[in-house]
Length: 343
Image 1: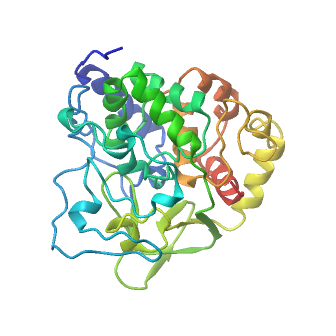
Image 2: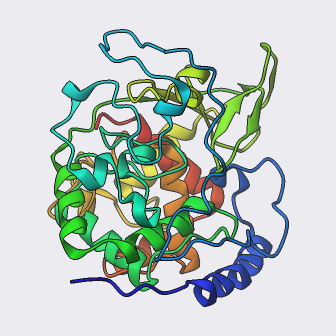
């Protein structure tokens, strides 16, 4: 069935208004990729279902013509080829099943970028987006439906890729939705996040769309009460888009043990035991997604979005009691623990 093409202006205005209230209530800046509060009023995005591209990234990166290579890969790509919106580099095709066209190329005619561009061909993505590899087909299809009908939105009115996902979901056909969901469900999620308890973190700077990168030099700064995820190899992530390159989540000392108590016991009524729905090993149960080993900042954003009511899809109701009384620090602790588990 062909999807109707509609401008999402009204929905985004509502998000922007809500965002002002959310920030006042205490948006956890570090989880959304900020080092300082973003400007009020939202991002002024222009994505539509008719042309989903237009809000999450600007012009293609400059290209010097040099062909890059990665270890154990037979491929070679220039920077422009690596970041091609409609056919990004697939460094390790043996790491995943053959990609369907919507995942590998998207639909350039309407500006619908390849799923593999942001989520990577292996479905693992980066901290600023969702790790979709290995999740249940029914869950992935429901999330796309929630994006499509407005039930899944970000609490941050400046988070561009969240708005692009709404437009993408509205532009996908039913067949494409099913095909992409089945593909990513068939990919295997393997460990790539290391959780380190520390009092300091390498100096870092924010980048477009909520991803931090290490600053030049070897300086550090106090971590404070934040969770900061950084790529283990900056150029591998930002220039080469290496899907095998990992990340480190720096968390305050004691976070993992405190998170374990919340996750496994409910913290004395503070929340609900996660294993009831997500399985005893947090690897998913039926249509409920796996959360073990996933990007920590992503987990915090979802907890906060559900607490604020911007993510309220069919299955989000199951999380209502679990998130209602959580503080920012407790969300951090839960994410530190779940990220430290073996996926």
